[in-house]
Structure formats: structure tokens, C-alpha cells
Length: 294
Image (cartoon, rainbow, N blue to C red):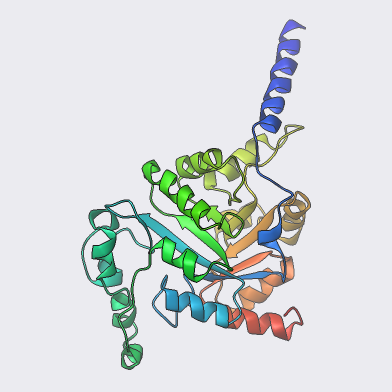
């Protein structure tokens, strides 16, 4: 009997801790406002212009995207820049990591080098050198837009400057943060008192599977961003309508990536996805328009 009482006491204090620790704000939904599903432009219109550039983001928004998605790394002088790879060889032709260069040095590189090298039919369209933008430039250029930010860098030291940058530009309600590094997303949530929405990391999803049976369990995230073609998703029915409905009833959004095929885009729409992450925002927009959803 004593052991049983200890168990219930532990369960009580655990659930009390979970509910009093400032977990995510389920009631703040402005970022997720419809039209739905949202079109989330992966690195902008990244098949038509060099990815993660101002020009690619502008084109995506002009093609009907609701949200622009981008990736960030920290430079040598601790500035956040928008680029997908840590090593810049494939993107710029320069075999250096982002963290080895200053913002000024990165600004001198050609962000279109790899794009046009791999798309030779587009080389005649080059009229300018594309730049790797700073996150600050993105905030200033797209201050009224919603932005999906993936923190690629695993170094915790940059979070203070990132949060300062968000606050200085009054972007806290315009962004969703995601990172595959659990230590990064966990620290970010605590430093912002869970006041900026985030997507689930792999560790969050595993934790949900093990702990969601607790009576007062609450998620520490606001959205799932899941690979549509994953065998793991299929195994756990995470790309089925019933799974989506259950999570949406818990005020969680479900976004799938990276969908460019027309049939798969329609399937994601059919099962009720809240967001479609795509390299082809124009294609998704046209499909939604034909379905009367735009």
C-alpha cells in the first residue's frame, strides 16, 4: 500500500510540474490562421531561383505562398545567416564552413553558384550575383510575413543573439522555430518562456509516444513537421486522416515535407494537413485554387 501511495504522489507532482512549467501557448493561433492548408515555401521558390535568397522568397510569396521556410547558421562573428548547408562548397563553390567566415566575407560569395551549375539551362537568366542574406535582412524585408525558421547550428551560444534579433524586429508572433537538435529547441523554449511557437523535434515526438498517457500531459510544441514519405510515419499511421484529426483536436498543427508531386500534394490535402512544405508553391496554389480552397 505504501509503494502504491508513493507512486500516486510521484504521479501527482509530475503532472503538477508539467502544467506549471510554462508550456507552450495553445491559445495563440495567429501564425496558423487560414487559408488552409498553408503553403510553406521550402527555401522560397527554390527550384526557380537560388534557394534561401531574398529573390526566391519574394517569388514564392508572389506565387501564393503563405509562409516562407528557411535555414540559419551562425557566422564566425556570431551573426545569423540564411543558408541550408554548413559547408558552402555546393552552394557558393567555396570550401568553407559558415562558422569559419564573418558576415562580411559571406556577403561576398555567390549564393547562385551551385544552383546555376546544376541548372545549366538557366545560366542565360543570370543578371546578378545572388547573396546569402542575414536573418536580420530577412526580418526587415519580410516584416509582415510569416516565417518558418529551422535552426541548423547546434551551438547554444547563438541563442541569445537570435532571441534579441527576434525581439528587436518584433517578429515573435510571425515565426515558428524548429530544430533537429533537441538541446537547441529545448533551450530556446525555456529562454523565451514558451512564448514563441515551435515544432516538435524527434525527441519531442518520442516523448509524446511514451508520456502522453499521463492525465495532465501537455505538449511542449505547437506543430508537427513530418516527412511525408517516411516509412516510420506509415508504420505509426502519422500520415492518415484519423491521426491528424486526433492531433488537431489537441490544437496541434500538422505540416508535411517536402511535397512537389501533384498526386501527393492532393493526398496531403485530402487527409487534412494544416500545411504543405514545398519547393513548388505555385503548383500547390494552383491545386488549391482548382479545389476551391484559394
